[in-house]
Amino acid sequence: MTFRLPPLRRPAALSTLAPALAIAVTLAAALAGCASPGSRFYTLSPSDDTARTAPAATAGNPAWLIELAPVDVPPQVSKAQLVVQTDATQVKVLEQERWASMPGDEIRRALSGDLTQQLDTIDVYGSPRPDGVPVYRVSVNVQRFESWPGSHALIDAVWSVRALDSQTVMTCRSVLNEPVGDGYDALVIGHRRAVSDLSMAISSGVRSLAAMPQVSVPAATKKGAKSAMPTKPVTSVACPTLVPAASAS
Image (cartoon, rainbow, N blue to C red; front, side):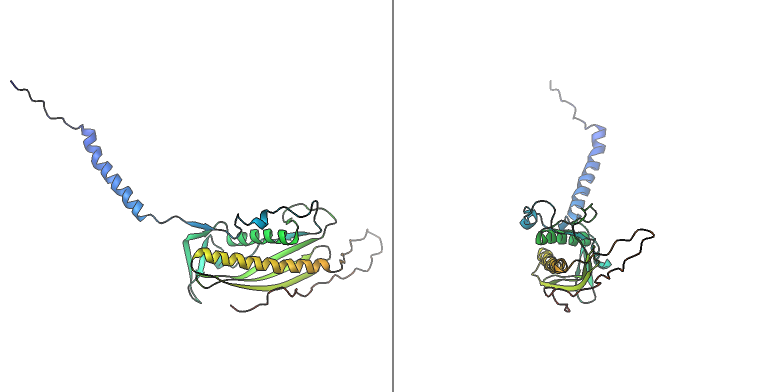
């Protein structure tokens, strides 16, 4: 006599789950195929810049200090995304090509690193500072920050240096136009070169003010005492010759 085992039956729960799993796998594959590529992030102050990590040449307080204010940039490029020119009247916002921080912060960080190295000083913006050490306040207003892929990177900036003890001020304009090759890496490197040139111009301005005779603004006299004739501080001085001449793009 021959005995036959009844056919195995798949549990009802598994029978119901199998189509759902198949749909989920198919959906995940479809989503993976449609997913956008990961974003790339760029900075104007690369971590491998050895000049920035070099030890200071002198110990103790430097001969002067700088105070670099936040940098203003045009609102149309004040975005996390890179904004590139496609022609004279149109731009493209690149969702996958992004700055590590906002462009104004990137420019300020790069300038601060360059200036402190070139001037052998400290950026004391937002920090307490010792008495008796000259402080030069640096302000930068970027009026144009243009990115032309495969062509050039342009920074047009009005900047000023003010001696806080005498209120002597120097106001200048620098237009930096750096040729670049293809690719967004080359474009960012071009902007980094432009920022470096801008820092050299500002450093020259700080040195020019530091070399001038220091005329301090007299402190207020005590109440009831005869006030002395105030010495009028120099309000403006010429830009140094090393500042790049303004030119059209």
